[in-house]
Image (cartoon, rainbow, N blue to C red; front, side, top):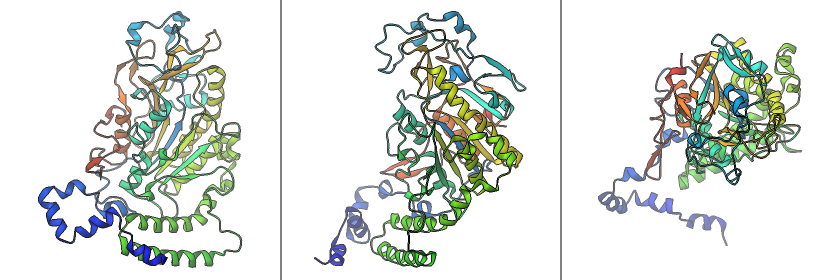
Length: 488
């Protein structure tokens, strides 16, 4: 068998139709269908490292985004959505008129009753508008004048995997591009030596735990793979295989990449697959990252005051504090979108103890990140987002006592906050009923949230599209409206 001959004989469906387009077959197809229905986006749009021509659509307030994602769904009732009337409802059943037939998860659907579990945590008023914040978040409470606190975010998904896939990609079904991939595709990169989209995973007590996070959450879907997020590791090389193996010098790596690029170019000229060009670009990015990533992750040049601001965990690689500091360093170096994940918010039982631990991990670093950006004059063009995939129920899952309870998933209303880049600080947006169960004023769907994020980056969410399988796809699907009330 001759491998070169076998390669020449390979004819995929794509190659078959590609050759037909230059012969008599194209005339036959054109007489039957509209060829544009089968066209993907033009190569200039999919392959340009600078994004799509014509973007941004209008003046952008944000150059970059840092998304602090609390995977597992933090309880809005214990952190943000103050419901003092619930103290009188302790252990009483949730009224049917409040639930109103809403679908609930299999974890509590078998319960004989749904007893009310008021938050045991105290809430104080903070900032110029007296925003209520739980005692769990003393540092965050100090900066509410920098935040727009949105209490009426909602989603249709009721379980973790579809919910987090939904908010990250605009669809509950896997396969769509992630938010960061859409930004990379539309706006391109702001630097040559780092990816435009980087993902950081935060450890809790030395491990991860909690709901699994799959690579599709930062994947590129049907976009070019060059737009997918690059996930940095907490230990060892930040990126696998970034270092040269023993016996290979920098000059040898450069010669190898040059030869590999030549072979890939020959293959591209033969078959025209745009993913080959993406592969070439990714090899070159990896080469440049050999220098840029070690410099990025070396925080020895940070001042003592800065390190102390982020808290004692900042010196431990992989912690949420360390990742928040890295996110600021990435923002300085032109990374377009940085996603910081932290898990273990899935608190169906023993919530008071678990949420104390989680808030103790994230509270000071969140405050430090926003203040650090502000001190460096970067908050004006950096959008910071905090929150999870859905909220938590007012009724208890499992046993209820005065000091302990659990909460089930609640998609109808939950809290997120945003800061910087044209966000109106000191905003307390949206209202829920006395049970933090239903929205009573200013609902914000997750499509609305994503439309607003894109707006701050200068992108009309209805015009950032990609044609795939005969349809124009976008992050907000066919929905979404900008939440103008939280914009300055």
